[in-house]
Amino acid sequence: MTSDILVEFKDVNIHRDEVVVLQNINFTVSKGEFIYLCGKVGSGKSSLLKSLYAEVPIHSGDAKIFDYDLKALKRKDIPLLRRKIGIMFQDFKLLEDRTVNDNLSFVLKATGWKDKHKINEQIDFVLNTVGMGKKGYKRPHQLSGGEQQRIVIARALLNSPQLIIADEPTGNLDPETARELMELLHNISQTGTSVLMATHNTTLIDLYPGTVYLCQNEKMYRQEQPKSDIEIIGE
Image 1 (cartoon, helix red, strand yellow):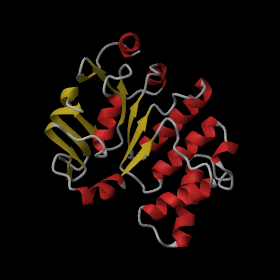
Image 2 (cartoon, rainbow, N blue to C red):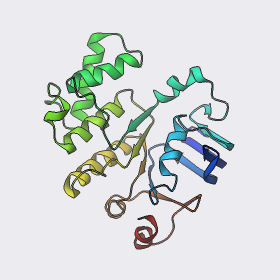
Image 3 (cartoon, rainbow, N blue to C red):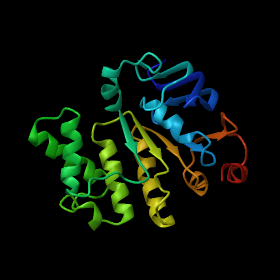
Image 4 (tube, one colour):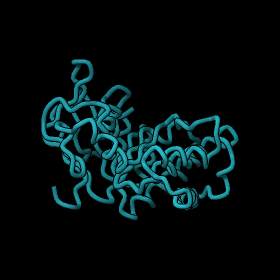
């Protein structure tokens, strides 16, 4: 792979419990690229995303991410791979029994950070990046859904990832808040961090253009059709 290509899949097949999820996948993710992954529930979007951080194995084909071969990845290397990826979940997965600052500190310490001053500096940096610089003392239940999702983005940015993977990040948000989050993610991609986002909300594609792939009938292919066609097929 060239230095600008972060992910490259060639003729990749993904199975879950012996069931074919996606087959003959061919796609790349370039530095700073914003990619949408569309398709119905159960079409394989989440399985593809999980394959990138080695939660779902590659059944066959050639699958590379950064300097790692996903088919030959050793268990000891999985944490190292995941430190290069920021992962956003639709259901937030924030720890409710601690503050925002403590949530973020927990992640940094778990990924090898030890210097307390540097930990605090990095937390301040990512919270300010997502417009939540004054909310670190609050607990998740004291924040709105949109604010919690901003914290999720901040958490994804903690280790300065090359790639952010977002699984339906706007699914539980109202339209205005969803647009604010998309604006933030697009701005992040323009600084050089790639974003791969699974979504049902095809309106966002019109507002924030990017590369579009469609998962359908065990296949994944680059979408060249008009946006209105994506809505019909994808939802």
